[in-house]
Image (cartoon, rainbow over all chains, first blue to last red):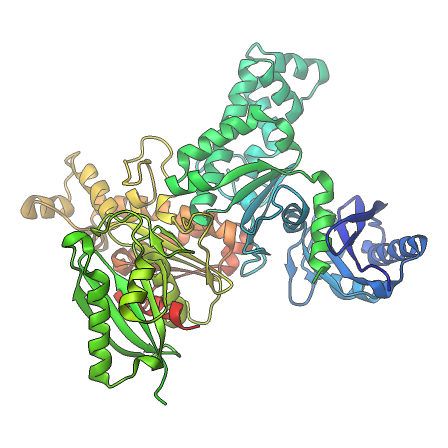
Length: 319
Length: 319
C-alpha cells in the first residue's frame, strides 16, 4: 500500500495552484495550470482533473491512495450543496455546481472553502499558526481577506460570510468607496490598493517628498515604494504608514477584544513590509486592546507565502 | 430512579441566584441567597452548598440524581484549574480556588464560566437563541458584557477574555474613560451608565428639554427617562438615543462582519427600551454590514431576563 496523499487546489482568476501533500502535511509536489475562462469556464474542473491525473501517473501514485481534494475558491458558497453563488474573477454562470462538477471530473471527494479561509487553515497546519487552535488570519493583498479559526475549525457564519475582516468599517464618515458597496472599509485603507490611493491623495497636495519624486518619475507608485520611502525617512510616506497602521491596529484590537485569539497572523504582500508597519500596528493594537487581550493575543507574520492556500485546501481533505 | 437534574448558580456581589433544572432545561425551582462577603468571602461556597442541600431535601431529590453544578461568576478565570484570578465585587483574595472549594463543599462536579458567557448560553438553551448555534449575546446593563457562541460552544479565547464586547473601542479620540483603563469603549456609550452620562453632558449645555426638567426636578435621570422622553418626542433625548444607537449598530455590524452569527441577542435593562432604540440600531447595523451579513444576521432581544445566567450555568453541567 502506498502512502496516503491529499490534494490541495487554490483556484484563482488567472492560475490554478495544485499540490499533493502527505496526511501529515509534507509537500510532495506543487504546480500551476492556467485558468481557462473561455466558454463560461466550462473546462476549468476538467482541466484540473486532467492535470491531477497526469501528475499522479508521473508519480506512479494510485488514485485509491488519495483521500480527497480540498479547494479554495473565491466564494461565496452554499457550503451544503457546494454551489458557488457568483464570482468576480471567474467566468462561471451564477450558482455553478462546483463541488459536483469537480467530483464528477476528478473521481474523488471534494471539500470547498473560500480562498481566505484556506490560507488561514494552511497557516494553522504548517505556517505561523502551527500548534494553535484559535487564530485570526488576515491577508493584506490587493484586497483584505480574513479567516477566523476557533477550536481548530473555520468559522463560516450564517451565510458563509464570517471572516469578512476587509469589510469592517474603520472610517465612519467620508471614507473611500469599497468594492463591496460600503465606504471606509479596512480594505480601502490597509490593502496595497488602499495604501497607494492614500499616498496619491496626500501627494496631490504637492508636498516635497521622495515619494513625490518616484510618482513623477514613474507615473505611479506601489505600496512597496511607500514602505521603502518610510524606512528612508520620508515624512509623507511615514504619515501614510502611520495612518494605515492606526486603522489596522485598531481593527485588529477590536477583533481581539471579541475573540481573544492566541495569534493574529498577517499575510499577503503588505505583511512583508516588516517592522516599519508591524511596530506601529502592534503599538496601536496594544493601545486599543482590553488588558487581558493585550497580554495574551500575539500578532505574527504568515510564513507560507502563496502556498498557504493549497496547503489549507489540502487540510480540508485530510479527514 | 428519579429524574436527573442540573444545578445552575449565578454568583453576584449581592446575591447568589440558584436553580434546579431538568436535563431538557425545564426549570424546577429557582431562588436567591445573599452573598456573604465577610471574612474574605470564606462562607460563600459553603452557603451555596448548604442552600442547595436544603432545597434538595425539600424536594426529596437525591444528590445522586443531580449531574452537577454550573456556575457563572464575574471572572476572569483559569479555566483549567477553576481558579478565579480576581473580582471587583466579591471579597475573595486573588487566585481563589473557586471550583475546588465549591466541589468540596457541594460534593458535585462543578463547571465555571463567566457570568456574561452563562447568560449567552442560557439564551441559546431556552431563550431568544434557542435552536441556534452561532450567536453573539450582548448584555446592556450597568456595564456591557458579551458572550460569543460558535457551533454551540462559548468562545473563551487565549486568556478567557473573548467576548469583551463592552471594551471594543468605538470613540477613538476623546472618548470617555472606561473602568478598564481605556477610553471610548462601547461600555462608556451604550450601557445604562453611559447613556446617563451622555445625556447629562448634553443637558449641561442648558438646552430646553423635557429631559432637562426631569433632571432639575429629580436631581438625576435614568436611562429609562432618556428613552421615555425620546418616545415622547424630546429632541435632546432623541439626539442621545441616536448617538447611542449609532455606536451600538456600528460595533455590532463590525462583529457580524467578523463572525456572521445567525443571531445577535441583546439583553440587559437597556435592551428593554424597545423600538425607540432597536430600530435605529438595526438601521446602523444594516448600513455598516457587509451585504451577505446584513441579509443573514438578525438582531433580537433576549427573552430570559435575569434567569439567563442560572439557566446557562445549569447548561454547563448538562453534559
